[in-house]
Length: 93
Image 1 (cartoon, rainbow, N blue to C red):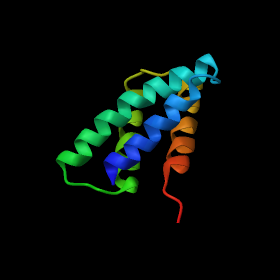
Image 2 (image 1 turned 180 degrees about the vertical axis):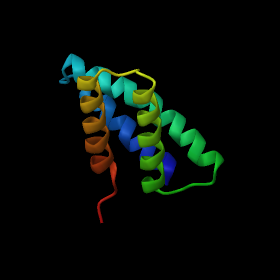
Image 3 (image 1 turned 45 degrees about the horizontal axis):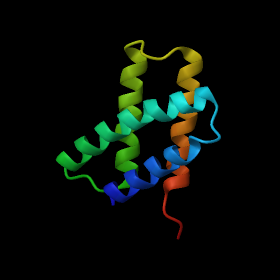
């Protein structure tokens, strides 16, 4: 499940390239790294749900923010994009 979910999120990021603003491209690239790390950690821990992955990505982002990696406007941009990507990548019932 996590690998499929990761693939959907990455495809959404890739699909933005032709029409995204510079800020959106930055946020997508930034999220790609956090997502990849979170997927590796989730798989190592035997986690399989999108909700668990979401929590891992958000923890990773919050750690980066605490470390001063993102300016306040970038924090808002990245967190909003992550929420949008997460919702868009969820399987439809």
